[in-house]
Length: 345
Ligand code: CP3
Image (cartoon, rainbow, N blue to C red):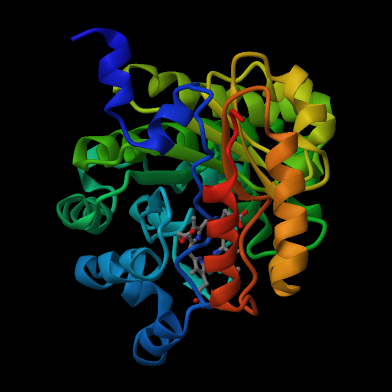
């Protein structure tokens, strides 16, 4: 079989992720399993987030909920970027964002973190992936947090507006910071390779907080470790997706990362961004707030995004996670808009 025919047998999402300028754009939605769905909220009445994510049958059920409702082109395993850190001995609670019992603020705390063997890292996530691969008809995305974003929560201790403890830590304790980031990179490599082994068909690396840094800091503490993780996945046979939010000032650095797909938030139009990422697939970038409006506005704004995505491979998504107040019928409407848009006419 020729390479072309092998490729054309692949699902739309994977073809676009591997760089094919497809006739229509595949769509999935960041946080597509979650609180905007009544069936998710019903499960959350009975179980905590940790119980849901930690029980393979439940995590698989939550992953499948949006797929039962909507003809999405990909799914993403239900877990959290902080999930694998528990295997390092970190105690985490969710309320609803991650809260670290003992934030990591000095060398001793960094040294105390152990890097587990890959097969010790959250085996329940791998079990969830195996269940999902038996059930799913669309590709399954695995994911993890980039080292700098994981460190952001570990050092700060919880979500925050400014992450000032992390930003001072990188400057005042650069050696401890590098040791921490290196350990987090090793953890992530093991975790993501295990996900691929279990059946994940693409990997998205979330660097949600990279954008709080200037380019020099990002180069030293962000890109270096994201590159370590992403290049370790080069031979795994799955496309790699990278997302940083509010990070257009870092795009020169992000363009050098070894990935197939760059996810873009809504602050920059895709056609303006495209020349900065030659040869890469763009993912994004509808403002998630548009989903709160009404079907006419969603059609108008989604069409704008679809047109801006022409001229190269495009995976449609929101610029960041979907809001919990989004009416589910707006999601159905968005998917219809994206699927009916002919990219080649
Ligand atoms: O459907 C999916 O997208 C898969 C599940 C998923 C979760 N977290 C579940 C979750 C994914 C991909 C993540 C990634 C994640 N987690 C990121 C990167 C994406 C981003 O938003 O930039 C980050 C920064 C986190 C850390 C985190 N976990 C935060 C900030 C929060 C609270 C925010 C919120 O939405 O309330 C969480 C908790 C969390 N992770 C929830 C879910 C479904 C909410 C738990 C609940 O239902 O109460």
